[in-house]
Image 1: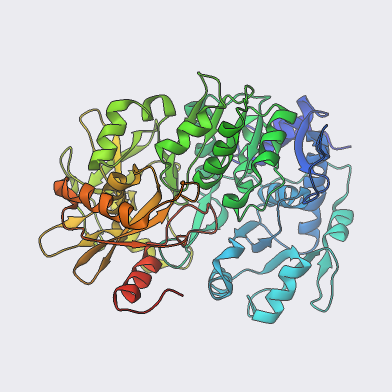
Image 2 (image 1 turned 180 degrees about the horizontal axis):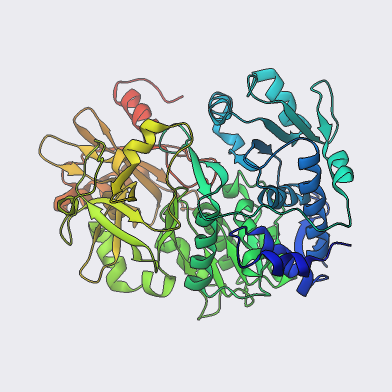
Length: 568
């Protein structure tokens, strides 16, 4: 049996490799639960009693990880090799991710929901030498020609058909050994992973994460949110669970489709929280809304939760309020702000976010309060421009209260996109050997140094006499009791408000809603130019969180509607 304690203490002080945290836990608490997975995913819930789950201990997860890590190296993969990973949430997914960290092999992670066209582009662009996936992923790889020029090493989880390569179970068998593990001595600047953005505001880009980036992210999350060893986490976006061992946390994977959080079964989520006495959870705004409505209607309480995170898009106050009815008074819903390139950047808890003065300012067009920057991160607001900014200058920064683009600098901020020099140039500003990352988001700072989010830079609507910022304007209309959400788009020189009615609203009258929204627009100097309201049955949203609105698609739809082309 591998001596995890020996491995951990020999390498802890010299390496940034987060895989060592798993081995520390395997040594100190070998039989404690590391991971719990649904035993019968998709099956009907039992009427009473426990939901069947499969528990994996820290010792078992470490052994699985080590076998795969050694097996991948024996298979011919090397530290620094890029390998596409297409595996759903499972023991194999988590052990493979830790095995990549341990071996120094670079995982390439892409949301499969971005579409066939973008999948091929992202895979080809990342120039992988290997591909590890379930049978269906390999079949799609062959059919659509993903990575045809570069992929040489193929590993299948499940039945292997005509595409060659090896099976993961054989990789594990080849790596099984009682000898000390071979671990990659990761330094701060070594590449750890390529994570593709969701593509919600353009073509997905491969973000280059170093081991130093991951290491600082864990430190920030642990210190900012008081995460404690021994706690149990429910990540409804499974990749977020990869940080848990570094924080000493156990992970429970919910029985849901992670690409469709807006359609998650709220009873399934609530019962697993109760069964495992979950302490911490993440949910997209769409999932938090769905679970919160259900819990409030049934007067459910979730006393074990110490903190709840929701991110991926602005979280409406009414969503936070409904979910908070299930929580202890001291438990907060945190809405951390960030992006794939830099997270977290800022955060605020529900106790402050729901203050009357903050909500009034938001509903009056003041933007959404996202709190102060996290410790150790530099955050500034610069003048709005779509041009590249090669070198930092202090005169780029705007005054307090002026809307501009957020820029950030710190050890959790990624340096570049893989094989995207033009995109990197647009997103980074060099600053005396360091760099600022341009978030592409608009906000302003108040006198206390807190940030107020106003929308994406690419979503601003330019009129002949002024510029409108999407989220800042939409917040004025989202307070309507029969409106689920709104989206501001530009059609020619017109500002158009697209509206999605709350499906739970009682007998909504669209003519009346439209009239009331236009009256609200006229009462605010910021929105007086908005004179057109269009109702959309269901906004197009991102695949990752089901919450980021594809305003570009809505703009095309609105243009057709105003041209007399019927909705399709």
